[in-house]
Length: 552
Image 1 (spheres, rainbow, N blue to C red):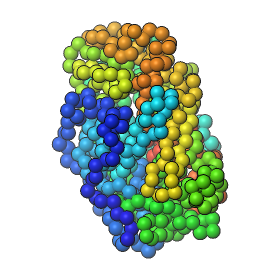
Image 2 (image 1 turned 90 degrees about the horizontal axis):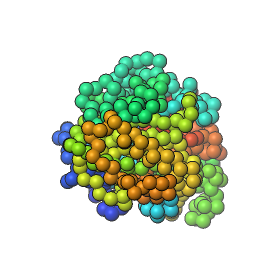
Image 3 (image 1 turned 135 degrees about the vertical axis):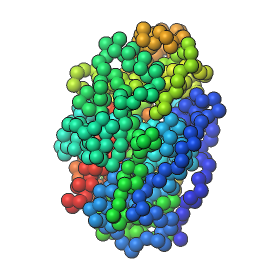
Image 4 (image 1 turned 30 degrees about the horizontal axis):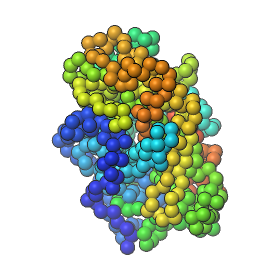
């Protein structure tokens, strides 16, 4: 019988002290006794035509396509292929997302480290004073789009124009638009009738006032106002854009599976994939605990930047020497599987005590953001977010409310890390080493970001809010102090990408080199990380991939 993961959520195995390194613990602490739940009712994540299966005994004998992973990419593919008449199976190790915190945008910190998170961790990071950093990944239908902070920004066109031909901004813009129903309506940059709803906070009235002060402060320091950071001017200071529909989270599950009608799509939940079924150099299906599910067409690996390379290596596709050292038979020597890991870092944070209570956000706690390029027409190196609540890492110290924090983020990292196998056992997590701050330029850019955040924090626009700077504090006066603060305060933005990148592991049609019948479709195929949050790019890549799969 195939291993079935219980539908009843289990307690995460990560210890409380390790969880303390994550954003969930940091933000939850800001609420005193934890993030208060809103009482929002559980959402319905899939349409009636999607058959939710809980046992492999319910499967059909064969499918046109088997999709591994029901995250953003997997949900997009199921929607597009299902609507085209293909028989589709999605296999998801997690369960349906019924926690109330999933639906309510401000409650997202409760989801990281919860039963819908795989609770992965990095190796100790020398660049971060040896700290182990949490690596949240969604263990739920909808994947990481169901536990993230809802930011939906596609970023600057220059980031995509560094990608190979066929994947540049002009190629992806129609896919961004096709995916989206934008709250401001359709135009040259936005879609008006796509599955996923994107809310621009520029058009709402209940934004937190500290975010408005940040926009004024950034303009006071010479940064232009960007009326639409997802449109023609994705740099400058402006209001955030979030995946929200009718006040509730809209993610890969609700947007795509929730709006899929008239299709033959099966969703097998609570079931781990044990491996890929290979025959004479071709991937013919997916191995579960005690059976193989066969596919007449491509197997579509959508398990994300951590687990897609893990599953390839378990199938013998990867660096030959590493695989043989674990006793695995080499199906195809592909040295770059698991390499080129990129992730954004943030610094939590440049913190201020407030003169009065800071109204909390009704959205994701970062209602306004500033994207800073080094030169005109270039993609940004830095992002600064204004958080309407205390947000500092445990190693920095305590920050009781009332307080607010300016958070610098490294958007174009130079450091590269790696994902590799710890064992040939398919249930053992991969080893994750992002190699944070290995390149000195990353440390210097983040130090610049801290200096910039402090400059904005002293602007006159914050005079009615600012009591004093707590961190890094008046004693942090020189460059050496800023570097030390970055090493102590930096944490992951949780945007891993690049471990099965186009040109190194997959070709421009996303087929795995040297293996027939297998494509990878998720953030692992990014040739370089976009200078924005990565969920929008993941969805656009999957939209384009669906066209490639349908065309053969």
